Length: 293
Length: 293
Image (cartoon, rainbow over all chains, first blue to last red; front, side, top):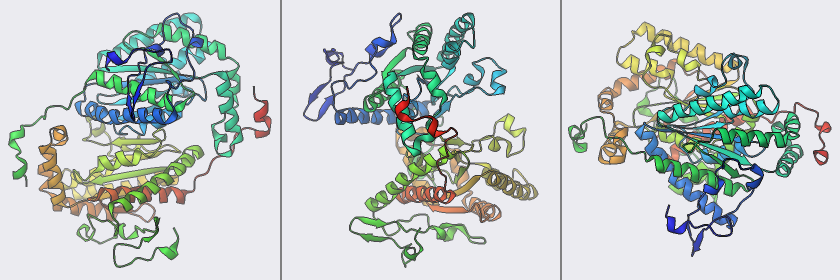
């Protein structure tokens, strides 16, 4: 990124437009969760001062970048990325994942949805089932919900006491640092929506026959605990957001912006990891192409 | 498919073109592997009498169909698809999978590459590692290589005797029928290429720095056993190709045609399975959208 261009302006940030050319200089640092801040101070909807078509162009540029970066990561087989998605119900985790992964090579990109733990999973520590799904070298793994559920829904419902929750923050940090030491970059995204937006999404599920299967009456009960959830998110992001694997609070109500931001964060992460094609593990000179039979 | 339109003509098959409208009536039955036939009688390259742009349009139509069909399969959660890909090296398994899966929702679409078995895997029967990766209800699973390696490379190199290979055909049929009885449709594709095409692909890997990592000198040794492999394929497809889960021999040298054919076979399979959105598991009347809070 060219720092000369990344000066923020009074809108969300500075993007310079010049005859069909968008200089993609958006800086997402302002969306990093800052210690002691409140979620209500973060936007749930953003457009960066751009219209839908401009956001689409920016998004597509990032998708283009991702292709090449992912191939190098996959070929190199030394590093990996774990992208953690957390959010309130109906914030768009599924569609975010669908959109992003449609531009990644599926071989080398794994997705795991963590639902209510099974009996077998409950017989182990809370990181047991998570650890098994950590990315291998060269892979990008997306977690649709994650170990953070064990300090979110569990805390909100009081299924574990505060001491246990505090221990879990530590265990999570230790776990993520174990992954980091083996070359896994952990990127954590909280898709941020308002309660009003969620209500609209629920209504649309009930009004559309083909979406009934997505509606879960239990979600209405969780919705009543909105402020408890926000507090649990703040505490978790504060306790488990070291410099090395920060939390981004993604304004999720404008899907184009959301998809652009998620793609750019992943592409920037990969670029910083700087994966490269490996040297051949054979003597190239031994295999002159014109002499192959 | 409308049978009135599927009459074959003297080219590969009949596609009627009328003012930007391609009536997609291609019938792939001729590419089904027929008992006692030889692979050399199957095309390695096909275009259906269409140019690149026309094939692209047909392919994209299939991709469009797949989206809706997959969502219904996923929502229904009763049936599943297992797509098995086998081929000689460099036939394009990876790019076939990359292309197809970019149009599927990655949640609900799993890919497993079966490589040289690990020590742990070798300590079990040959279907042990395979069975663990069978699709769950609602899922589409792609196997990049599969249990068929155990009657292909293993047979060609004589790592198992003929009696064992014959037993394995039976075990494979039993296994696939176990899956079928639980609602899994098994579709098997052999990507068919010529030895000349493979040679070109190998050369291109050696000539391009960014592709060196894809070249494996050992592939040149396997290449020398081409006719043994063809014979092993023929025997396996004959022994393990019941009506219910047939083998398609896909002409793989024209990628547009290949991608179109694979997408259409999958879409036709899904359509025949006729998945549907499930009825809600709650009383819809209890949740009038306008009264949600």
